[in-house]
Length: 72
Image (cartoon, rainbow, N blue to C red; front, side):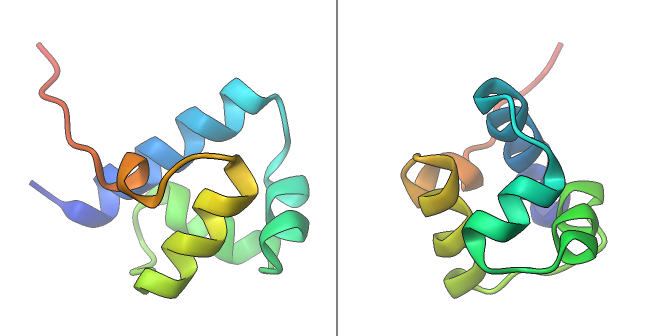
C-alpha cells in the first residue's frame, strides 16, 4: 500500500464530491494549487498538519483522507 497514493485518491474523491477545483481547495486550505495537485497525484508526502488543513477545507475528518479500501 502506497499511503501517498491513498491520501491522494481520497483528497481527489472528496474534492470532486464537494464540487470544487484544486484551486478552490488550495485557497480554502491555505496551500498552493500545485501542492494540492502533487498530493492528489501521490507525489507529495503531506504532513499531518497538511492532512488536517485539507480535511478541514473538505469538511471531513482527517481519518477519512487516510482510509484505505481494497478495490476489486
